[in-house]
Image 1 (cartoon, rainbow, N blue to C red):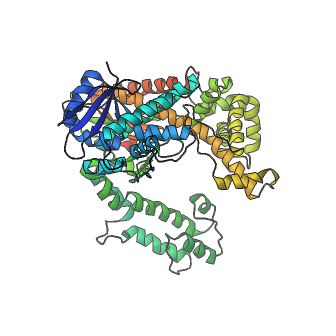
Image 2: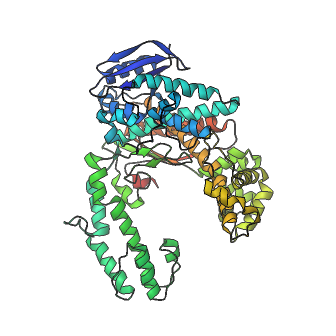
Image 3: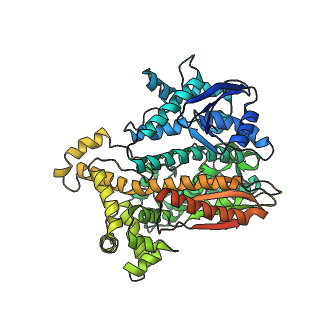
Length: 573
């Protein structure tokens, strides 16, 4: 039975074309044309569970989702090979970081044609309009899209087979599969949406900011009042509290010298305007990022529909196209309320990055500490006389390259107690300082140094500690030190998403099926019928164990998930 089916929607209408493939990417038989692509895809998914091959989830899966969701049981597809995401991974792995990754770009490279630049990311709302799909593929006029998909897929499979080291090839294939699965999950979360109570959101905004202004672009009453109080506290001269420069000048006029308006610096200031400025920044951020304009644009129909960018950060972490999908303020989580008869299962990985370090490095002593509950407390008992704060501060300093202040003695203790783990991050830092490339556990490489960095680094050996060359090399060392951990944590999170999504597909109750509705770095939220909440919690735990095994192999390190079953997101913490 074939394991792969290439899929290309028609430019107009509901039809499309499909072609069965071998695992290596060789076409089997003749292509199939259908006038009802979603129905045909659903039938093939039920019968064969293939891995779908397409230019991108945005161009192929997103337009199908509304129809698939209306089919009995809300049919979803299990696996895919996303050519655009895989092309980006392969280009980076081959040292061609940042080269265009669209289907048209990959096709052009195969045919020695001019390579088109990538277009800006499309959101699901745009991708659902199939009129845009051919343009976004970036193919030359007259090119057969299905032929291009087949050719690029076959080329990618060949490039994957060309990775010489067998273990590295196996891990990179897992990254390819997990990244593609992430595209499925991202599209489905945008389609399903996070339950959002507009009336609760409006009440919260009114409580914090005052009534919604009748004139767009004007400040709410409480924010405007706070602005006046802030000006009065700084001498009464009018200034714009949203202007960094004007705020610094207003404080300076009162004899208070600030380097920035960051909250931590304002907290050090003994002046009544400092607390007012902190409060103004908090409320202004809510008004700008998640106020009424945000609600109008992003929280329609009782759902917030996040638009994720899979692998949008160089470490493999996701980004978003807008809407603050990765930064919902804690106070506004009160607006995230499950539907009647449903619950939210909120789960996050405890101390993920320190556990990743323990698993990556293979440090047996640190792994023993990470085999139980609180990793910081375990390290404190063995290395810091029970002082958990020192253990946490030292370990974070090791992962992020912090050496100033009181960190030095803590790092010395960590080097003595956990030499393998400390050696791992310090080796990654040296590689970065020398201009080298480090990778995540599954093989995602970091970006190479820029030409400007290389120019500075040439004189770094002779540079004084404060000179640009020395600062530049140390900064890259800090970047690569943390990259190996953060990117490997992103590997694990992708594997978790894929494993959990697969498990949720097997659960169903009288009220419906549970589904992922939110994801941010190390936290997932599942919207589930109440009677399935306990099973969803078990699925989360099992998915975390599977992700750990897939990414890190046999390790004593455990990656526990803190799970809460709630009606309101704000009650999960």
